[in-house]
Amino acid sequence: MTDLRGIPSVDKFINMQETQPLVRQFGRAQVLNAIQGVLTDIRREAAAGKPVDLSENSLVKMVTNVLETRMNPSLARVINASGVILHTNLGRAPLSRSALEAINETASGYSNLEYDLEHGARGSRTVHARDYLCQLTGAEDALVVNNNAAAVLLALTALARRRSVVISRSQLVEIGGGFRIPDVMKQSGAKLVEVGTTNRVHLRDYEEALAAGAALIMRAHTSNFKLIGFTSQPALEELVRLAHEFDFPLLDDLGSGALWDTSRYGLAHEPMVQESLQAGADLVCFSGDKLLGGPQAGIILGKGELIAKLKRHPLARAIRADKLCLAALAATLRHYLVGDAESEVPVWRMIGMSTDTIKARADGWRTALGFGEVIPQKSTVGGGSLPDETLPTFVLSLAVPRVDQFAARLRAASPAVICRIQDGTAQFDPRTVQPEEDDLFINTIIPIASGAINEI
Image 1: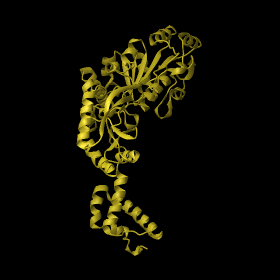
Image 2 (image 1 turned 90 degrees about the horizontal axis):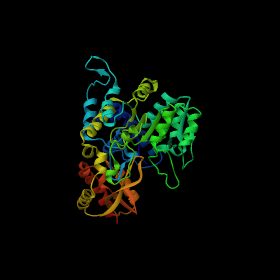
Image 3 (image 1 turned 180 degrees about the vertical axis):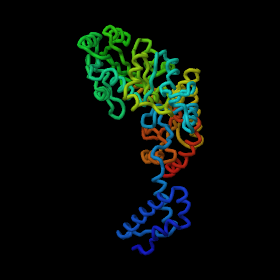
């Protein structure tokens, strides 16, 4: 049984020479709290008859482990080798270098977030991405909020509270995390009027609902699933004409909101923001951190008079975008304006990456690692975009024992590496590992993979 008399007092412990580097790194209060916790655990184990090492080195190591675990940020960088480009659980779109520089420039000092430099008076944060969005899409006005669900909530609250909103039953979608369009509509105070059936809806269904009184028509893009078989729905142009005949606006929720034609890469055509506006949609909502490739944001484009109503609504302040989001969004939009989005925005660089480039990188990984097999596979866009659509790729496949444990060790690394487990192997897709991460990726997995192979 451990002699408890060998346990140092808290005061002695924190004043030991070996403890001073910890005090300088983590602060006296944090070190003191960690020491108290460690000593309490030691006394508990000793009382239970467990042997405890009371040497100074052992005690300092225990306190160090507690502090490092406690002070490590819970939000950390990971390397995404899963092959899912817009991985919702991994933060969706990585930002371009220009967007990162814009964030740093804006965050490192003061900015004219709400200050009019020309007139020396109070300004508005709504102007900072507005002109770029209008130039790119032809919209009369634009408003940026903190995500697309907030954008839809604001539009419905400001324009349809206590009034009816007509929507097809086939469009009452659920997005990630169990978040449902009907719940957003309910929270806005709008009255949901479902028309049609799950698989078929006709223009007359909308017409009958509008004749009974409504505030607007809403169309929600089914971005994370497909309806196939015996299905039908009116074209957006038809819905716009009908809404305007009744003098109601039409709100088009695109979800991902592409500004770039996905069919150029052999994928299905994702509805584009420009197309919705050209079809006459009065308001269009979409995300900033999906196919746009920017920061998390909800973007609302459309008629100036309607956007003005949204800007004046009290809810707009509660869900507004902050300066870092606006800086990154503006930098991302500039890529589209100058025509280099395909090479500079990571999402499009990944989508457009050739299979020759991917295979060459996978071969390089295999050479550096010394084992494994490069095989053809499929990448996916993800992020609620282009359901069932894939891109041809090559992956480095590692047949290791206890593959689940191997993947867990990769997740525990710094940085964590996220792979795909398929056919009993761990697979790593270069498409979603940014080229500048290759060395870091290889240096991270080599000791873990080598250890796993040695277990065979």
